Length: 248
Image (cartoon, rainbow, N blue to C red; front, side, top):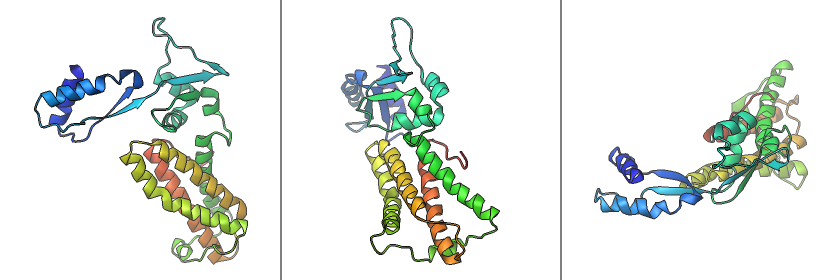
């Protein structure tokens, strides 16, 4: 009954779309709440509100499962997890899998500064691009964005550099579709997976190209692509509430 009253209040306050997130052990309440709302004859459409059901999370620390017991009063709050693993890592890993799949949250891995850690890898990629602009200033070089956008990139051929360029451009072009799909299907894990793939694509491009070269046109063209990558990484991280550091 409290859930029915709560959702009725939401509907009356103008929330035409409502998404309620629950643990999988509460799946039985969905039909009852919706039936209660329909019985009120308040103009609420069938199937409202939407529900996302989450499986339980297993927390690991030091290679061992953190045992939780409601009866004993021992449990790990979200604040505890944030305090131990950090806000960015906690948000990333809780979003990085489908809600209906099991999650093992390894606190030690989430805190690690390892390239195997996806949130660290993505943030490092953003910081690395920011570092290019610091080096640019230190060397007394310039960057003309308009000139860079007008430069032809090395797309032809089958060299590793050409493949890396094509792959990076393809990943950048996917961003709007990924954001749309994540929102429409209530699957934010699509965005974390995409950001990791984009960071990997940029790393391959980074390894195959020199950016701070003397040729102004080549320099501007490559930096323009790097700048676009940094912007998409920053936008995606902002959407999921994870910081985009400029140095690490």
